[in-house]
Image (tube, rainbow, N blue to C red; front, side):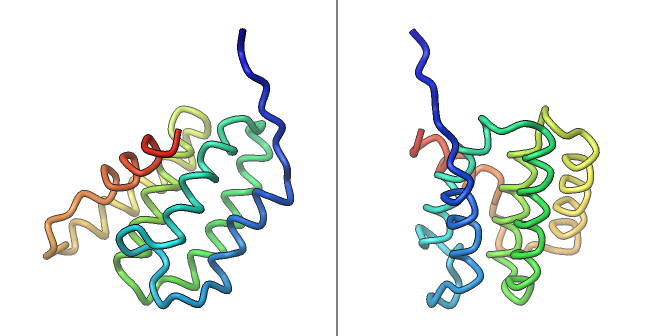
Length: 126
């Protein structure tokens, strides 16, 4: 028997908007509150329609603009958007993937795989 998940728009918006007002300097650093919220968010976004996903990713993109000063936060949010749009919104997925690849190609001197870090966190919270 499959479980039905009730998607609460206010909860989705709360998880996104928490990152606009987060008091922690870099909420997406290792195990930061932003990562925890976004792991929950990814699970909720699996159940929404494509048009709703588009709308929520627009809000995430807007929120991400406030984190552009931190390379790590920006890359993890970008990886989250890429993972979330994969297989559902091909144009958006391609755009996120291209931006991620461009930023990594500009010289990620840290040698990290932000996609895998985000994937692991998402799967830990499933």
